[in-house]
Length: 212
Image (cartoon, rainbow, N blue to C red; front, side, top):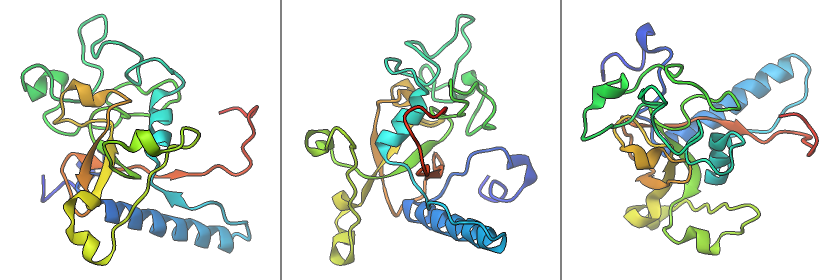
């Protein structure tokens, strides 16, 4: 897969993985530049930058309006009434193929949440913009929980300062990490075959009565 995954058409509908946190941020910058260049060429106004989501934004999107459910599809189970798995993860005692995928699968292989967003849990875990701290919930503001920290210079050599939050769980994780409230981390300069990302953009002009 190392030889084929990033370029072969067979993987066009698979999630991007093997990207570091820094590379994901760089892609957001490039995508912003590309869009704004196109808008300028059309004589239109620029929009907000693409970026990685905060973990609070990620969880809000993953829930899809189901505030009390542990999974994007509802809850509390990870199988449906027919016994079929509802996401791509490491089921049972590690029989990876029981859920239909040995590694990542096409992003449309499982049903989306109520907002039409696919693979918020399972398949590939996702980078967020936030730094990881076990006690972050104790000192972040509850109105907008957002803890960001990027080490520079000598601090980059301190591993604990290079941790970034990942959410959603992946094909190699057991069911706990597929819960929308579960959080863990990876180091920002490492690329993993089970961690990807998705871009978000702050909406311009949103009012509370707007349709989603």
